[in-house]
Length: 329
Image 1 (cartoon, rainbow, N blue to C red):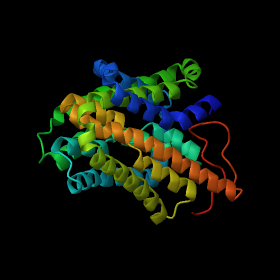
Image 2 (image 1 turned 180 degrees about the vertical axis):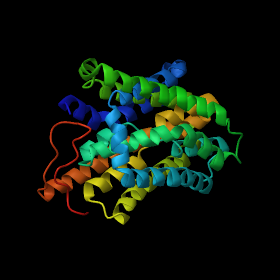
Image 3 (image 1 turned 30 degrees about the horizontal axis):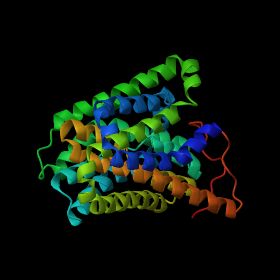
Image 4 (image 1 turned 90 degrees about the vertical axis):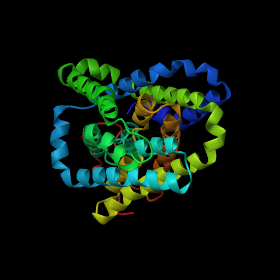
């Protein structure tokens, strides 16, 4: 991974927090950009597609046990936990729908970079993100309806079309570009993660600006739901790796994949199907999960260094799983 990308990833939580704070103070500066949310997310997903090849689908079959366990826990735990926490802490119906939508979304693209920084298995991370993203076409609308349909009417068809537009089409185009124009895609690879991070930060800023007036009223309870939701996801992912008897890098990868959601997708779908109030949980989750993920990765690598464990190689390659995994944690 290029050093610039590594530093950008480490600074990303700070950029997100500063963008959100600026949007809260000067909401008028970003609210006119609301129509840009969906195109920005499509750009992010196009970048994800350009990291994939046909061989990644083969890898999904090879790692089926771990992939199935991780994606299964993600879709079972995250939406149910979102509903339980939202009801327990008294969120409004619309905020609850937004939180459930976050839980029903696939893994986030930032999880691949966070996995690299944490000393996890990058190829496994990409494979899990790919599988959960493909399943999202059906899982995201259906799980949102299952857990939140009793609160507000859920436009399942609108969510389904949104997933096709925002995820499937850009990922497919990106994969085709990487398959047939690999040299052209290779020239973009060093800068695309940075562009994706900036796009995510801008999306968060727009959503915070749109909800600036009501943010103070729901801030504490919603922040608690977001933090607890993310923490439960990280813990559940790590726990399933422990139950399966996997090594430390695999446990870390499962933890990050389950805990880090594609909250940008949740924001875009909430905006198209429900309105600004339902977009806020996704924006706050995005800001927090990247901060928490980066902090957790730093802790794991600090512990590796303290134990004088081998470090991963310099390249972020989909086949660069750690050759010598850390001992069980």
